[in-house]
Image (cartoon, rainbow, N blue to C red):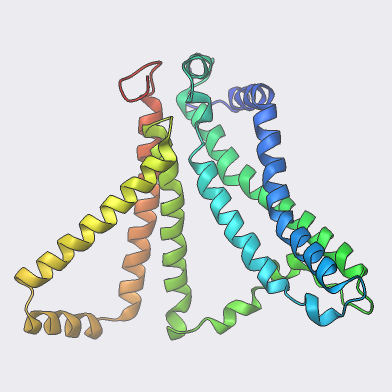
Length: 279
């Protein structure tokens, strides 16, 4: 077989969408319903509490809806990343996928497309549906202004106020964004390592790693680093051009992100029907 063939890639997509149509449909509908639920609960509760003759001041919480939908979207992205290889959950599923007439790269790239693009499309559809519900509820309020949740999401002018680091704000925000993407995609790596209960195992790994790293760092600081040495390090860091540090941090974040995907692909290529880790 060739390294990559677009027609085979499309065949893998058709096969997966046909075999797992119910799984994808239920997951998407559940996510859209969860995103719309806070608005429905909020307005129905206030209607029952304040009666149907309410004022507009009671319902000007659009930024709260935006925050809730953002958190739900992040949680949804993490959970779906832990299900990127859901076909491999059962022994029969592994047989079906690993015997497909396609290369590992073609099957792997399809899973990446579903997680990276498909999940975002579902989340955006959920935002649009919640925006529609929000507008319909606002129509029931006398003299109420129709405010758009989608517009708030697309309004990047709010980022202009985030300038705690001066003209280096963009680089620092970009670093934290890439590191968050690394955190999310590490759940894909966890799913490639273990097919069942991989999300709790990934959370457990982060819990153990953070505590162990914190204790080790405190031990090293107490044992080896004196106050004079710490002051010299701080002076050396402050004397270096901040742009250099920001560029180095972003390069490290990008390499880490690429490394997570490469290791995930390596583990996926080594998938077998049964192993001790995945019976």
